[in-house]
Amino acid sequence: MAMIWRSAAMAGVMLLSGCGFFSASGFKVAPTPLPDVYTFMQLEAFSLINTRKTVADHIIGWITGKDCSSPRAERGETYYCIDYVERPAPPPQVYCYNTLGRPTCYAQPYNEGNDRLIGFVPASTPVR
Image 1 (cartoon, one colour):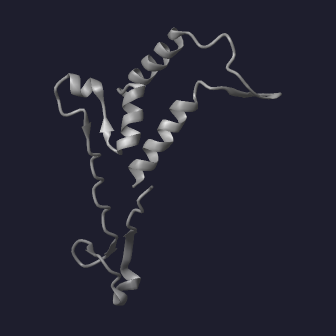
Image 2 (cartoon, rainbow, N blue to C red):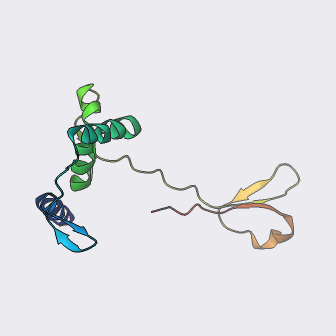
Image 3 (cartoon, rainbow, N blue to C red):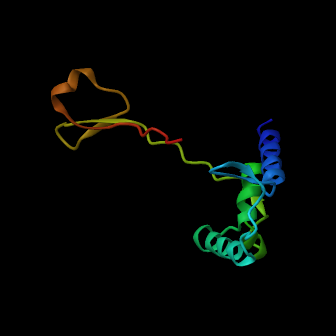
């Protein structure tokens, strides 16, 4: 369902992109000096240098929800669009206590050894 909304939004943007623009005095027809072809070539080069993807790759990847790259496909590494690599599971939280030998670590707090707690590593929270 999300792909349909993305496709519809992208189609709407593409249909309305050349129709007009907003100026200080309101909605008008596009200005006469439109950006030349070199502007688009510079944007394409900027995208390729910084992300190793073309502008079209970004748009297609946004619509499909996959990682699309024409330079990667041209080199023959993989397909044009691949699924994003899943992030590894976060490490569990750890409670470490001082013992006679070396420290002992548990996944849950050890209630009887609160005076010997030497470290606590909380589980990382995923950023999304």
